Length: 324
Image 1 (cartoon, rainbow, N blue to C red):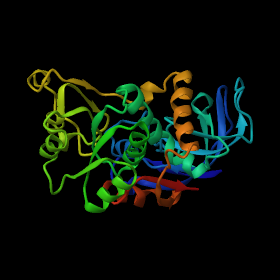
Image 2: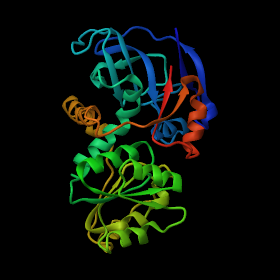
Image 3: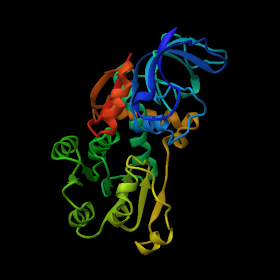
């Protein structure tokens, strides 16, 4: 027996219960993990509230984690007991032990500890595909990134600096502006005291950005579109402030023949080869020192409800890890 966070009904943070659960043994294509850490992500809130429906109730939330393989099921050849692994995309990480699909696990390099591994997989691979696949960011790129002091944002700040790109980041306070700049964000805009559309126009000399990365949703629409140059790309990859209204495609024509995409990490890493490519690119920049993963908050796994309250209250910066 082991402990896990279990949700019996969707709702507020209080619906997450710390319970004893039966773990069992891995079946074909599965591994059994003893987890040391689980990452906290906004997608966990979406599943907890029912914004994203879970496959069944009750369920254990959490999309990323790290730990040690303790047993492997039939047909698993790339992992063995004792291997250190990390993953993103296999629901159920808020647990001391768990059964997980082996093909979602990637081996952690010796240079990266478990806490960092748990903090970086979902956010880091999101940064990886956004900057390398959704739009190929380079030295000539100017882009706007909302929530620049968040978990994905602080990784993107460093990656943008590494690539030589110009990054404009929105933040909610002076402290978060200082934090984003210290991680490499070129320009910051405090959306509580400044009009981010007007500031983007000032910063870009009226030209606008090549791409806007938007995980906020309702509160930044349609203003994000007004920050783009002609033929620019709006990449909407989350909805922290609430769902977007239906988009009238005519708006894209009016605002400069714009492009829009709604990517997800899980599409990008659905194939094993892509998972290895995207995670490998992340491991390389972390091992080189070009990117440091800021784990700015830790909580005991049993206190996941408080971690959710703080995340939703915008009291967190960088990454948050739940420790077993």
